Every structure is written in structure tokens, then in C-alpha cells.
Length: 536
Image (cartoon, rainbow, N blue to C red):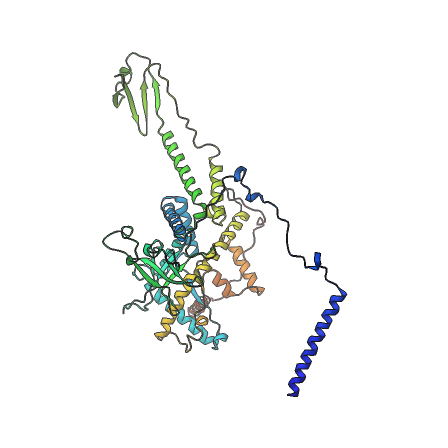
């Protein structure tokens, strides 16, 4: 008891000492107050900003706010429909979608298990064995990933990535199919996002926003997906709740539905198409190019008017005219067909008005390129990489554009692997564990550590492969990178590459061939410092 009292007195003394020192400091450096001995409140001088004025060019710039969830849903759906039409009808949009999906996903991102043996309490050999088992499980399941049996997992990833770009989101249901022919029950069913909507008789419910039933923190609780009637098109059936299926987002810790989009607005529950910010520019450019194309077709089919001064134009055109027509006055008007153009033999005194064939104008290419630059900027991509226009671009500019584009692709690849692939991979490994295909005793205790993986896709191309390889060798020699890191960056798997090298070495030695690797270095070009222009 005395010890406790002593301790309390000591703390009290310390507190009084600190208070005393604070008072002394205040006396030495008095606080300066405002009028009436009150503290000065924070404040700032406010100035009118030009961005808020309503005069001149800003007079009619009054953005329209949406004050209901229903209005937001209708606007988003209209944008999605326009995006679908754009991708299906505009060559630029179609090419950009295909380019993004091919680069980000390609044949599919592959899992590279990254298990930390120390955190799991297992040795290196056990960790390697576990990683090999996980790779084998995914390889066996991948061809059976589609619930419809038409796609492998790589094709599903490609389709989902296109869905993100075209519709702004993806919607995938994860059923467990009881089929003895399947190695694992987990399957994926890709659903069109336009089937996700709020039933008309449930519009008054505040917890259903654009087809997503949300919880108190905005988390998805359930999804309302419109059913399909095989007897009539989807758009013909009513949007009442009787024609919808309510699917829980999760059952316990397992996902029933994967719904993802790039979030760019707080409180967002649905995604926006990739082309939304520049959709008007895409459409206007398409219309402009179409008009120029039609104009050039008309110009190419330019007709020639020949004035005939004789009394009988029929005699001049005898043997050459393909047909004759009667004009309003009853006179013969003769033509000679030269598809796609034709020659007209007119009467004396008639003067034709020719069409100027100089189309497009001199500013056509410059104007179109400026529009394309604006489109590229809206998609956060370099113009050279997005439209694959390397005319007038030197090596340094091409490399800079390639690296900038790859930065965007890698961000989207990492996001896609984490948001879409990782949840499915975790569920697959859980099923494999329950089937006895994973040798680990405490899967649920450290589930996220056991299923940790990196998702690697096809590597970026190299403008000059020799320089890239030499840079990798220098990084390895100076301990700035590892062989495994370089192999992974190139789309390979370290263990598999090392196993193949070992197998190749044993095979060469068994055949009496030299297994030594050449260490020759490719000499650098003396003209290497000069930038080569890629323009023809």
C-alpha cells in the first residue's frame, strides 16, 4: 500500500512539476491575444474566382445536377448504351478496346504463389511444395472455369476486361457446379451488366441503388439481376421484382457475385464506361471522317459534261450512248456510263457547275491528329501508343511513350489481378484444401497468407532487346535485382525456368555436349548515341 501511495505521489509531483514549468514558460513568452483579450479566429480574405463567373463564355456554363438515384441510373444506362454502339460501330473505339484488353490480360494472367514460409511457420522446402501444388491446382481448373463450358480462365479474364472498358464494370456469378466430370466445382458465369438494375416496384427502397442492395457502410449486400425469359427478348419483359433474382453478394466468407469497377467518385455503386469523358469527341470524329469519306467517293465518281454545238447531239453520240432519257421539255439527254462516273452530252449554251475535287483540305491531317491527341489524353495514354502512329517519332520519344503506356497497363493489370482474380483463386484453393489436394493443416487460420499470389501477364516488348538484357545483367551483378525478379518481369516463373535449365543441362551432358553458357557480350554500336528517326 505504501509503495502504491509513493508511486502516486511521485506521479503527482511530476505532474505539478510539468505544470509549473509550463506556467514559467508562459510567463516568459506571453501569449498575444486579439481585442477584448480573446484569441484571434482563423480566417482568410476571399476573392471572386473567374471559374465562378456567369459572364462571357461562362454565361451558359451551368452544370446540371442529378437529384435522384433513378435519374443517375437512367443517365448511366444511356451512357453505357452509347458506349456499346461506339465500340460496335467506330473503328477507333473498337481498336482501343482490343488493344487495352490484349495488353492488360492477353491470354490471361497467371498466378505466381508467393508464400512466406516464416510467417506460416514452415520450411522452405514445404513452402516450395505448397506453391507447386497451387500452380498445379490452377492449371487443372483453368480449362473448366466457365460455367457454360465454352471458355477457359484466360478467355474469361479477357471478356471481363473488355466488360470493364466497354460497360465500366463487370458482373460475374460464382456457382458451385455438382458435376463429376469437373475437377473442381467452382465456376464463373459472366453476366451482362445491363441486367443489373432496380425493380420498378422497389424504387422507394433506399437501400437498393441502381440494382445493388447496400449495407450501412455502402458495402454490397445483394444484387438484383433480371431473369431471362427464353420465349421473349430480355427488354420485353417487365422490370417488376417478379422478373428478378436476388443473389447475396457473399455467403459467409465466400463470394457469390463478383462486381467490380474503377472507383472515381465517393459513394459510387456502379461503374462508368471507359469512353464516357470523350464520348462526344469519338462520335464527332467518326461523323467527320464519314462525311469526308462520302465526299471523296462522290468526287471519285465525278461526271463529265460535254457541250455539243451541233443541231443533232444524237448523231455525235451515236454508237456511244448507253441509254437516253427525256427531260422536262421532251428533249433527249444522252449519257455514257463510265462506272463509277459518267459522261453527259448537254445542249449548246448549257454551262455545268463542277465539283471541287480537292478533298480533304490541307488541314485535314493536322485537325484529325489534334482530336486524337485529346482522345488519348482523356484515356491517360500517349497518342503514339494509343493510335499506333509512329510517324515522325524518334527512338527516345517512342521509348518514353512506351514506358508511359506500360505504366497505365501495369496499374490496371495489378488492379484486375487483386480485385477479380485473387478472390476466385482463394476460393479455388479453399475447395482444393477441403478435397485434400493441399498439404497444410491450418488453412483457415492463415488463409490469406496461404493463398497469397502475384498475377503476372505477358511482358512488355523491347525496342532494343540487347540493351534491355544488358541492363538486367547489370542489375543482377550489382545486387539491384534477382534472377527470379527478372524472370517474373518477363512473364516467366522462376522455379519452372530453373527446372528447365537443370533438365537441359543434364540432357546436354548425357549426350556429351558442352553445357557451358556463353558469356560473350554483344559489342555496342559506335553510333548508338545518335537517335534514329523512325519516319520513312
